[in-house]
Length: 126
Length: 268
Ligand SMILES: Nc1nc2c(ncn2[C@@H]2O[C@H](COP(=O)(O)OP(=O)(O)O)[C@@H](O)[C@H]2O)c(=O)[nH]1
Ligand SMILES: [Mg+2]
Ligand SMILES: [Zn+2]
Image 1 (cartoon, rainbow over the protein chains, first blue to last red):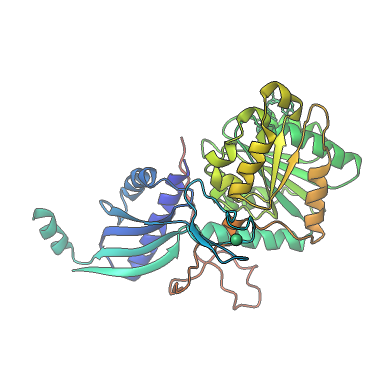
Image 2: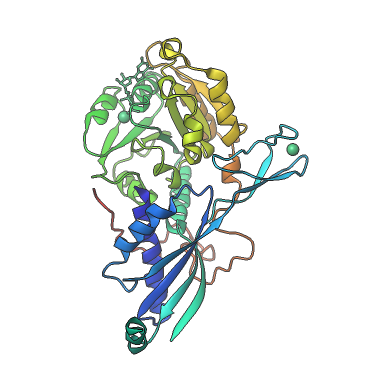
């Protein structure tokens, strides 16, 4: 299950950034996951929880933003939603010079940091 | 105090840049790497055995690295061809990554190797996301696996630079609908070449070698639609965070990875 490797890559990258931001905790990590990225968000969420344990991300929430697959035909300029499994051949002219406009994203979009441990505790108590 | 940081970073950036570096290193020494992906039992080892034997007969310096979860049987089979073979036991990890491959090649891959075949872990999901620094990615399916295989595993088939349909000697018995399979391949990867083989009858034996050799000679390689979007560099992305390899230095590819950390792998 490569979702675990992906979750660990996310944790690794956020840990690095946490040092730069002098953060003491992470409240949430937002990931952009393309429809054609080959990743199952549910499996990723599960792995993410495990990968965070014992790191500065412990307890962090994973927020995923779905990015739909979008294609454009280079010869007739038609644009369409690829769907899944994707239709990557132009149905209007049968041309295969298709450009993929979106759908392969697998990126960290943003992180919500916790900077003050006392504040983090106060939040927990709320 | 909570603060939100816009941290645009591709999750697989580290693997992608390691793969790019390995591709450059291999190219510099005249080696073409071929990454073979399929479900378990599609016939990767059988096809490789035959192609390697042919390479050996033709005096073509080839080598093979085979990854398996636990057993060494494939390496034993491949070694019968007489070319250098290395077995990698992934210990449960479902795919190879570029850094792992680079580590296994170091000190093993003979200098004069022109073709390096990598038999990936039998799995059509995970290996598809990991570039290994190959110059030709081959995805295989046998005629007994059904015509909708490309639709069930669109990432694997969508990123293939060559699709091989194996066990053609069984096509009739299996009632394989060739046209339906080809239409499904075309849906997810228009323009990719589909090669039909049989390790039993020798159908199209040698074609894989030829394709790999011509890639080494600089022939244009198919660029799948799915690979035509830069996965991580959407317009407007900031690269404020350190890039894994800077292109500013005089020897950008000779430097060790600036962020190299022991890369833990999940087992089990
Ligand atoms: N009939 C037939 N059987 C094949 C062919 N290629 C492989 N096989 C058989 O399929 C099984 C799996 O093949 P193998 O090469 O180990 O698949 P891998 O797991 O993808 O490496 C073995 O029993 C092979 O003998 C072929 O072209 N025709
Ligand atoms: Mg095998
Ligand atoms: Zn069109």
